[in-house]
Structure formats: structure tokens, C-alpha cells
Image (cartoon, rainbow, N blue to C red; front, side, top):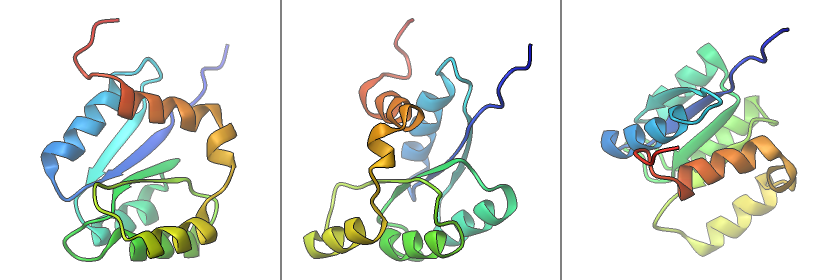
Amino acid sequence: MCKEKSKSILVVNSDPDIADLFAEMLRSDENNYIVTTTFTGKECLWEIGKNKPDMVLMDIELPDMNGWDLTGKIKANNPDMPIVVITSKIDRKRFILMRQLYSTKKLVNDPESRKIMDITFFSSPHASS
């Protein structure tokens, strides 16, 4: 029986502790996600060019560019790549614009994306199974 390839997720956050926390939660899932972390927009673009992850999980505030601009750059070359944006600060006008440009219903209907969201936001990396 052929085992399905593990999904790869790129976590982008300027705070290494937060990036590592998300990575740990995703790696602890039984699906054995392959998780890579980067801390800048430039590193993110390089990693996408090198390895093309199945999904990007990123913060809006990065040291070298904002996540809105980074989303545009990613989508220019990878229009079907799912991007989950995580932020505690939001510019409402920009949010509406980005939602119109890049949001799809696929995320809501895609079981894999829903599972990743559940792991990332609703589980503890140290919870026992």
C-alpha cells in the first residue's frame, strides 16, 4: 500500500518563538506535516522558490515587508497556493481588499486546510492524545 506524501507547511513569523510554537503544534499531528519556518518576507519567497510548500501560514508584520505585500508576491507566481494570515493587528480597508483579491471558498471546504487550522488554533502542543 502506497503511503500518501506528507503535506508541507511554511510558517512565516518574525518572532522565532511564535514560529516554533506553530511548527511544534503542526508537527505533533498524526499527519506528520513537514514544517519549515522563516522569519522575513525575503526568506519566505526564497523558501517558496526552493521547495514550494503546500500551504503558507504567516504573520502580517514582518521586518522587511508587510504580509499584505508578501501575499501579493506569493500569489503572482503561485496563484493556487493557500495562505493563512495570522495577525493581531489589522487594517480594515486592506483586509477587505486582500479578501476580495485572494480569498477563496476552497479553504472552508478543504478538509486538509480545516484540519491545519484546528491544530494551529485549537490545540495545545503538549496535550496528550
